[in-house]
Image 1 (cartoon, rainbow, N blue to C red):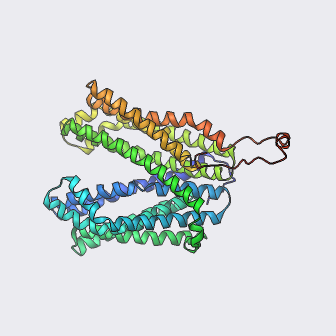
Image 2 (tube, rainbow, N blue to C red):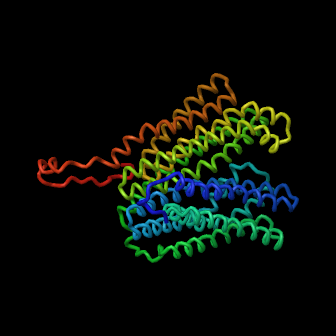
Image 3 (cartoon, rainbow, N blue to C red):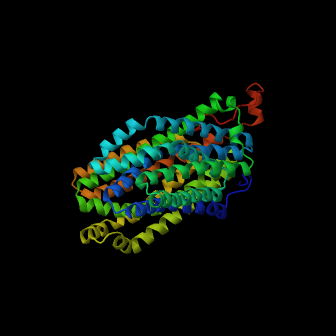
Length: 465
């Protein structure tokens, strides 16, 4: 656990950020490996079923990614306040929420599958394989969400090294089990779903064991403490705010993809290549957002404004530095990346035409990524939600204007950059006021005496100050 009394340094930011960067990289590698194993079966329909299944579950679970972020922010504040009891209570509430939501997803699997399969528009053969995969993997939902909560608790304590270890262990188990079930036991795509189920369940057990070694006992927290009305209301409010922000972001990206598809298959493919380039940069930026969650959350819990400002400043500086470096690398090496991903001459030419805005995207994303971590750590989630809503509206207006002017795919990329810029500018403008409300200046004793001798209440109010 990081020492909340120690001031943030560049070394502490990097020590927190880089392990989570590695952890994020392992996730797409796992998806690639699963596709390779299913591809060995030689049936295109099964490979399509696996790919669609991954998209469906990413959409379901990404919607509840707020559970990790909210748990990390609340845990970091409890660590900063030196309240180990609240650290355990926060995790216990998050695990209870994971169990309830996960079981609800399992119980609702039939309507979820019906909607997802219909929207996918897949062939009968693909849907048959998808159904076999879906109705096995769906039972992993409670464990997957519990792992979000456990990861959030570990990150809030500043142990990103343990977060990396747990994520790698889950992914390695998934790889080994996929080989055993798909190729060894000849269970096809159902085996891939079963592998994920067992790996996620094992990950939950491993995570609880790791936390126990840290002295944490969330399963021993009394039910009355879990059901505390004020604490529950705060946790649910933070989760709801982050979820709305995430859904707005997902909707914005989906609109970008849908409009790109209307421009034709070549443009769609070129955008897909460039989007993967942006995602690579996102792995690094997300690591610094995690560092900001931890350091700013602990400073907030300790009620240390100076430490909070320093942690925020360092997180922003490093995120911008990496965003700029990544943008430069993408601009210089983007041609090679494009050629490595696709052999289609038209797609290559189109992707090169839009390489500049794609290369600039990591730089534009650096500020909102860093501020997301700062806002989550401070639990200014209501402000984050409202600023995301405003940025989404600005994105819609710019998108409509550029498409109406016939700017085509260039207008799409310009609008996406505007979305990132609007988010960062909005968060930067709101930051000073939020800090001032979260760390109010102490009232002089003379003023308190004039007011009747009562000490003013300077405690932080709602979760967004």
